[in-house]
Length: 362
Image (cartoon, rainbow, N blue to C red):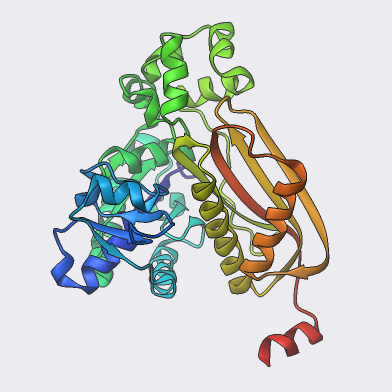
């Protein structure tokens, strides 16, 4: 029997800051900012919701965060603690379904169609909501952390749902109601649309997702170029992307979309270093090395460039990956204007040879 497709997007709420507030009760209710202190160069990794009320955001320079929120409590990141907590959260998700695509340390997509076990999408709605509520309650009970869950028939709808009522939200977007649900939302509700892109869409009288739904193809192309077809499909709740949960990885990558397009070299360098660390952590967890590294840069006008290099010796350390990516940057001169997205990828993965294993153990 074929079951109705049901996907969850699970997004932990202010993950790093929430862990700090859980582990240090004196921080609860206070504006916690995880990242470099405001008197040093660095950026914000995560801000609690109390700090976000002052305008503090991830990837923002710490000095700016300090000015916006002078009473903020700056905490040095405990990466090992966050990684261990992430593994516990993912283990809980895997108890419900093996079909889990972890997309970052604090979020994942789940295909729970076989858990809901309903062939009729309408009948599947209440069962899906019950399962999502059970999952949220279990994470809260076992890890003392809150998660927001979006439920839909594809990745886009699930992602929009998880963002809709944060923190501690649960939003189900039914297939037969998706266009109507999306219609009144601002264009910023589409993942990847930041302030600069929203301003460009507004210049073409595209303020809501409904405006995009109604837009003629040529009008939308004038606003966002070759991204127009994809953007229109998303505005209608259509997304053909499949979840990636192959047992054997062919590549490992990590991306970051900035809330505001930036040319700040300090922010860009810090983001690249963090992405290199995330890729390195995954390579280590999978016990593989990468021979090819890739840099992805998306500019304000949605132009996207990728450049890659193949190394003589495979690597998996964060410092080595960062150095190789910086070499690509220096050679290609890609930081030429405001940037909306950076990505670091690795491919040509191989298991460690006997010599590599010996070096890692000694």
